[in-house]
Image (cartoon, rainbow, N blue to C red):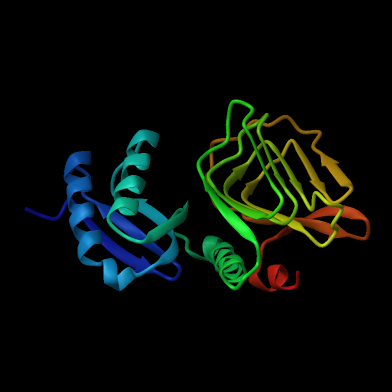
Length: 223
């Protein structure tokens, strides 16, 4: 019988080619074996994930991500389509941030989605591995990187620092604050939780205003 799932790599990411008639349990069992066997090959890495071949529900998606995490040292930063170019700058920027944190910069990672008006507050820079839903907030004395959608609130540079930034895979915030500068959207949030394509952006201060720019490694490296 043909494999239930094949793993192929592309620049900064991996693609799961799933057999259309394979059950989720078949796919999960093969993923567990294949990622365990390839643990040394992938090492400790941060990647984007693309899934093709069959429709995957949100619950199935979570189980697939859990299986990869439990059987490897691969951190899935985001789920994208098969167009790797849309995600390359975001992954490079994330790797840049991780190097800064591992090089001695104070910071932390938080794994999980913020909802039901949950709030995270820290004096250091923070990388959130999940979405920030409307009504929820991330508050940091440093920088904020959200590996998901920012649909709620984010406050960076809490001590009045103007050199901080906020990065999100999908940038549709209710409110932002960097240092003492505030931004509030006038648009009704209608797409949160739906990510048709990766559109990573960075919010930072320019000429006394919060501006949004497409994320590039070069831009992030200038901070």
